Length: 156
Image 1 (cartoon, rainbow, N blue to C red):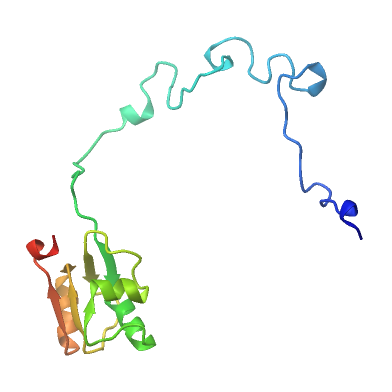
Image 2 (cartoon, rainbow, N blue to C red):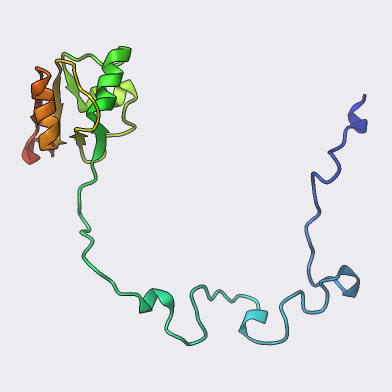
């Protein structure tokens, strides 16, 4: 076998349709755009336009309020922290937001880390994070550890 004998499998590549290139192409004359009208012209982008009818995105009710400066927390469950302690990726003596990121449990801290109580937790660990659910604090205390939540002033 030589380089010039190499070829793709039959049907692996397909030539693109070149529209408006004469009657022999099968997409000649008007290039599949029909006759006249706004959509037959070039430079027209009318996504969401419904021919003068009130568009769907305007007909649906808008509810609630989206806070522009809300905080986004990185969420981690106690079960995952326990798993990383068991694997030896985390030291139970002192777990901080930075050690959680360094271990690979979290990708980034965002505006802080919030611990939730999903999963079993048995390690006697000292955890220091920005936020935690009441159930998570209780679960860590039950295991013999301590979960401290930093105040808002200390986090900034």
